[in-house]
Amino acid sequence: RKRTDIATLSAKNDSEHVLLRARIQTSRLQSNKMAFFSLRQRTDTIQAMLAVDDKQVSKQMVKWAASLSDESIVLVHGTVVKSPESIKSCSIDDVEIQVSEIWLVAGLEGRLPFSLEDASRSETAPEVEGQFSRVLLDTRLNNRIIDLRTQTNQAIFKLQHAIGDLFRDYLNNNGFTEIHSPKLQGAATESGASVFKVGYFKGDAFLAQSPQLAKQMAIAADFERVYEIGPVFRAEDSNTHRHLTEFIGLDLEMTIEEHYHEVKELLDGMLKTIFKGLKERYAKEIAVVSKQFEAEEFKWREETLTLTFREAVDLLVEDGVDRENLDDINTENEKRLGRLVKAKYDTDYFIVDKFPFELRPFYTMPDPNDPTLTNSYDFFMRGEEILSGAQRIHDPEFLCQQMRAKGVDPESMKGYIDGFRMGCPPHGGGGIGLERVLMLFLKLNNIRRASLFPRDPKRLEP
Ligand code: ATP
Ligand code: AMO
Image 1 (tube, rainbow, N blue to C red):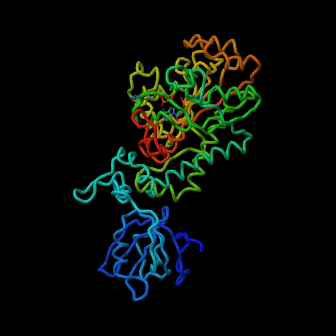
Image 2: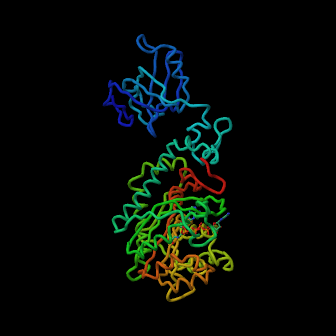
């Protein structure tokens, strides 16, 4: 017999016999003769009732079933019956199951570290003493498997999946090829500062801090347009709400016909398609998350606002920030810029273009009209960076010169430079942090909530 998916049950199934496997979300013994259960499959719940009868169900059976721990997995035989009134505590509210047999499939060892009910409470609701205490993020992450069972987390990871899917779809429809570049590298990439060193037989290897070099080499190899979704490793001891030591990079690289704006516009079109896709196709999941993480709806404009780095600095200076402190825009000022832009232009999404040369990596193309600036951009959501990208230098001699200017020894990246010696077309690209996009779209306030099993300087488990 096939097991029933409770989401498909409604009044039309009245009197049908069903077999189903589910978790006990909650149970309650009512007198010695009757027990009520809320049974859950993923995010759907249905009420089930087990009552003593003169055929199969004994008093002992009712008592035993009611004593099973919450979150146990049971197999249930029963009959669908119309409920006399709507069941508010369950997502299937018009029918319930009259149980004739119940079998334990998988029980629990020990107690649950917290109830799913507590883990699902609004993050802004005030705690009421004696009624519930908030489940702290660290406790959740230490018990991530239970934590991930909440409706909110089920929705968050559906949305994470959706972002990757929309990214892939958009690029597939625009002539891109998906690539898979190695994460083990023979030399520290990009800049030596922030890579993990791992033992590699008798020597060492390094974990890639981005697919930067590989995606550029794919362009030199005539792939024209490439993207990658893969892990990125950063050995930075950054204990902030937005840094992980391993995150998922959504990276792309493409050739340029005439101007680096082609890349910027493609990235912009893609991100807006992702936002629109989430809003239109995943409204249910967004609504579920917003019950726990209240947030103003994420807003963007049809025509994206682009500020140059200089204009962004001017906005901050006008608002009272000392120009002396604005050689770079730090996290605090980024947030401030986000608030200023929101007030003035009513958008949570914007681009900052033309960063100064000293703020960008050696492979960034300078602005031909002003060599103190570069053809580079960062994209922001709610005042935090989600994307960084640029036109790249494709001339090997010029690349070596820029490397030396940034204190990188060209000898240490010979393989990369040789890629350009065989002729490489003009190109540009960008990299996005998947967890940052998810965190900021939903306003989760901590990147760890947007990562299945987050890795940070203090966490390698579970
Ligand atoms: P990128 O993607 O360019 O690395 P990022 O947002 O990670 O972007 P960083 O240059 O690594 O940028 O850091 C940006 C900001 O994060 C810094 O200006 C700093 O304010 C903050 N930050 C980084 N590390 C720490 C830390 N350990 N403690 C507090 N703040 C930090
Ligand atoms: P960058 O270092 O700015 O650029 O990284 C690109 C994007 O990745 C995300 N990100 C992070 N997410 C979580 N934890 C971190 N520690 C972290 N660091 C970065 C951010 C950021 O915008 N090679 C370039 C990209 C390119 O030019 O194509 C690069 O890696 O969302």
